[in-house]
Length: 364
Image (cartoon, rainbow, N blue to C red; front, side):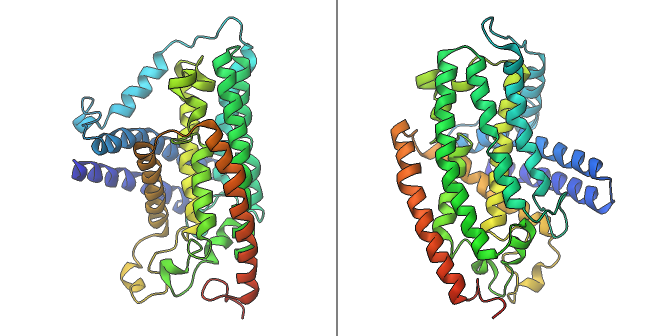
């Protein structure tokens, strides 16, 4: 079973990497390259749902989807077609305009943030110097879609889920912001490409920022779980408590847009984690004696493999940990993560002032 899933994942990886490579190497217009990239992201979202059902099924000694197409490979296509033909029902007491606008506000920032995400050296739509600020600004806007969805639905369950999600996202966004400040202090740049290049040294994967910034790495990734409302932080969608949370009144393609936004944000958090702490497109053997044997591997492939590994952790955590209580989630965000990030910011600043090798010895 694992061999079948791995072979299919390899085929999907080949399609996505090939499409992005063609988009950048054929010198397509910016619009054309962006359309190709968005199509690849939507394909990844579709088959991330398939991978989630299959992997968690194996972990729980189940088979998972296996009816539509060979080994169930066409299940995401069937799900998409089903959602396209489902009726969109708007509650009679809902604010119609805001009800429809909410999924757009959730989806828009999730797509727009990819404008500054580098796939490889020079493979970025907008290589802006304030990339981290752009990421923080756009990712913080996603909460507006969730709040509007809960309020416009005119439902107590939806509104309670929206309030839960808003307070949770604010709490963990502060911790994520401090973690990014630690990366900024370490790299000395707000540009995402420069952050990746700052991790290039002769120690391979041990020269990346995950090691000196290990507490910030853990806080950032776990906060990413909370930001995307994934288990065990999914109280905003707690089906055993508030039915389905903020999107309980949504159906058809409006629900599908929320679904797409959640999985796009998962991929985005994984990509940003790979860039900030895992060397982005850099090979894990960069600068070592093994580097010559892996020169043929393109950087975009290393980037994709790191993102895939982090996405596997998303799925693994869902299958492993029970849902936290709401008070536990708030306590973790405000009383544990924020103090840890503040303390390690000072430690990072000391490392930089000491030019601690190999991470901060550049220019000495």
